[in-house]
Length: 575
Image (tube, rainbow, N blue to C red; front, side):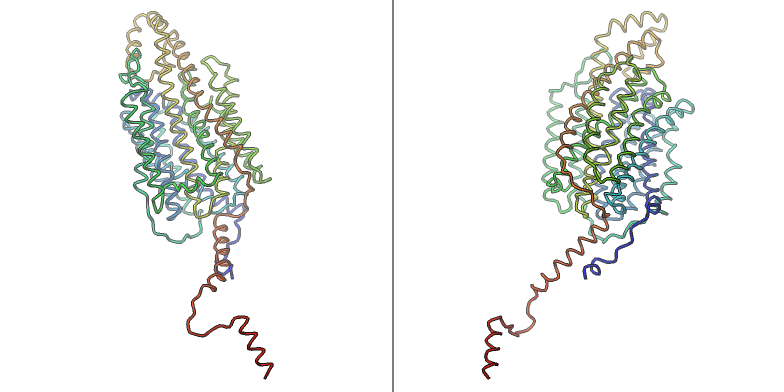
């Protein structure tokens, strides 16, 4: 009876069928990663050409991360209510069109706006790829396929900066934004042709618009405050910070963010279809995974942004060279994600790898906080490898353990919830690290004022030109500076960037503690679709006898109790 009520179970997909179904998802993730990373090595050049400063540099990155974080739970909620495949294709279209439009930017503000729209599409790709994978692959088998996603991310992260550097040096940075278009078209075609997900019952869609507005307000106010607090606003290198950490602006922005966050929690508790169901936090696995994901996001996004700056501003590398110099970190991510994914699938154990990964996050973050402009590059490479390996071991597996313990009906919001907090952690981390870098550079420039003046005086007729460049407030192109000036600014930026990495260390320690306390639950061998069918069958088995017992009488026929039946039998024997 239960099988008939639950509906026929489709035969399990073969390895080849799974790979065919994942091809479109993998290419979609690749194009989103490529479009993001291809710009990373050219950002210092882009911001310099658009006359932007360090705050603009930070916001070009932060704008994408912010809208990615905010849109991720929205995509996840939609995934539980509507057609997931169509949503994924829509996310690709939004992402690529915004990326192409960013190539026509004429000022930092225009670039930041298009990057914000780009983040909306990126949020959909990040959230929906995990949800769609859960539809067709069980958690136990998902390890090796998540390793493929990790490999795709690693290849895009390696190839993107390299390709971006070559394009920037050969044809100009604007072509970096157009390179993803043909790949995206192929990804759309592949998704349509190869990805076939089970039909889902139609639901009445209810979107928590008030929650979206409040969440956006809370996160945006916090990030704007973090980016601007304690930094100079006039752009003059000699100007002292005039946005004090304790000021009216701080009170208004932080107070507004807190009020919006409190109202968001109240709305989520009362909403029929909450953006982030707070009941998920009753699950200790979800709560601890969220805490751990925040540190992973800070390490992943912070390293990708500021290591590129370190290579170009502290070591005088070109964009192409900067891409090559970050290969050790991506190599660590690639090897650990593929290797650990295969081990999880083979043995069904996940917690030891997460613990080792979180330890590597702590070690990599701390060691990168000790680097300077003249640190032996072999040591820098080892530090980057350790950080990359830590990210590779933790990032995908935290989503995996959450999906393993979440009810099938909430896979979308649970998966996107972890991704959301990872993106949010990365967004806040990049903002805080960028603010710390700006403040540190301003302090170091003030301390080295005599050295900078002496270097300028030694330049002869070029002194006025470089003095004006430094006074402009735009991000300097260190590699183009004369030797005397370049050495000073390489030292300044090397110290400033290493100082910003120190911020990631306490978050990595918190991540380690959270992972240690994660419940060590075995991975199920059922896909999300099979779990839903099984739960329907269990419900039918339990509810049929209970329903029969609750049926009301349709007539006035009196049923006999056991005592009545016994008395009637005695009467018959007496006769």
